[in-house]
Image 1 (tube, one colour):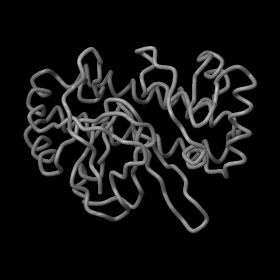
Image 2 (tube, rainbow, N blue to C red):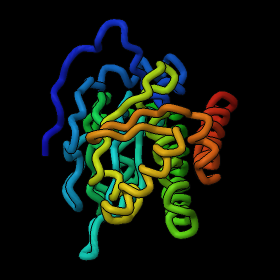
Image 3 (spheres, rainbow, N blue to C red):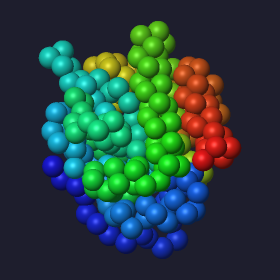
Length: 250
């Protein structure tokens, strides 16, 4: 499995994993020696189904997708960006995952060896509490995705996913453009590519996005939020609640 190239942090670019940043400074200092900054390349596989997980990843930008593959096709069950951790099974002393985990939007991550992550959890109660809370947030995302895919309209689901991706690639830094192929959009929505074209076309005609040759540009964020189903706010509030709990209890 490729693991990305290691390279120093780029000057002038703020790239911080929000989960790590939520830890007290002393706990961040404890985990820092175990971290290596790596590149996350497009379509790079982080975990194959049922293969041994050797590293966990704290993304700082970009987006990682967890996909369930079946005979009828492939469907995305969850995504992780700079708000989270890729490698949750390790927290539960599980060495593999049944899903394919790969990079959907290019970026960077802080990588940690599986054994080192377990060492951090043993030695840092604040880190252990925060990461287990995040595991619950991710579980809630999977549950919400399941309900959303069953009950909500295609265009609303597409808007919700684009908003989540926009948050992760750098909306706070004014980044409004990211690469996203029809193949990945079809995984996200659990539909075939012609339906993806229709959904993206509806959002584009309404002036919310531009979609050209695999590149999404968010044109009107407010309109996109209005087109999304309630699931976007539910997921965002769940993560914000995690951070509030961190401030009061870690």
